[in-house]
Amino acid sequence: MTDSTSDHGQPRGPALTVDGVLVEDGAVLLVRRRNPPFAGAYALPGGFVDYGETVEAAAAREVQEETGLAVAVERLIGVYSDPARDPRGHTVSVAFLVRRRGGTLAGADDADEARFFPLDGLPTLAFDHGRILADARALLAG
Image 1 (tube, rainbow, N blue to C red):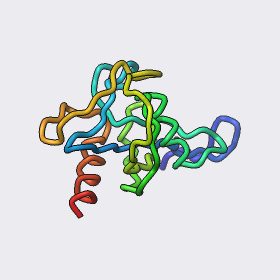
Image 2: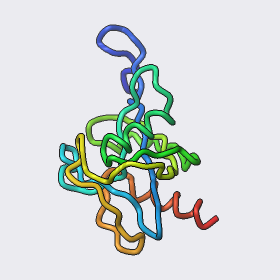
Image 3: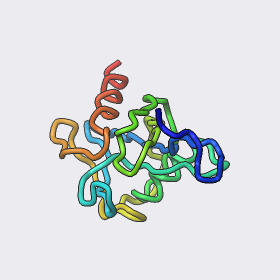
């Protein structure tokens, strides 16, 4: 059994993250990661939820910070909680389908690049983002 408390006796749990899936004209928006883990690899735009922030607001914020695009959250894709999904430690990600509302596409924050890839020509994806994208495609095919 693993230790369920922090060094300060507080309950310890997984970190909460979000991912945004934006699909337009048969292509999905990906970012090239600037930092480890998976530096240089492509991933869905996303990141950690701030204290006091809803997961929906965090998803929209992270997509905008990393890609320059303002988005609206459309639909929940799923919750991904495999303790091995992130080599930094246990994270739980809430993934959403999002829709573009504005902005100018450009990699920023901890993304070196942001661009659309055809769904039939994807690079190898970081984390478990291949699984998230497969679930998103199933929802879109619906």
